[in-house]
Length: 188
Image (cartoon, rainbow, N blue to C red; front, top):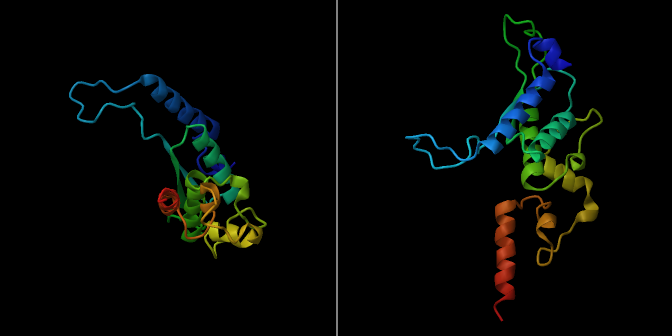
């Protein structure tokens, strides 16, 4: 609805269909074989497609944005989303609209990272009654504070997924911790 109201020349479904066609075409294209191309061989669109989501211009919630972007990512249509907090521009039809706090954009990026790198599911993310991420704390900490039953975590035995839920531990530190545990087990 928002796209129809602010950009009637565009069509949401057609945009998603285009992303899917690009995905399919790149999968079927095979490696690049252009004479003189200095890039190493690879698929034509190896990096994938991105899409921009303007946040706060309409009624879409953070949960809506994250559910859609995660679905498109899981099906290989979207490499990653770009979130942009709405900023009104002078001398445009939306010049008097309310500006979206940039912190909301930041929280969406953090939540998206939890979905793609920390194996969270969109429905696990904690949102307020309006369906938006709380701005006061990052999404991983908010999740941890609302799930006290998941803590403490025994770092000497917890699996990767459980360790990734601990605030302060990321993919790299978790990988190092698991490697240290393997090394310690092999010292005998």
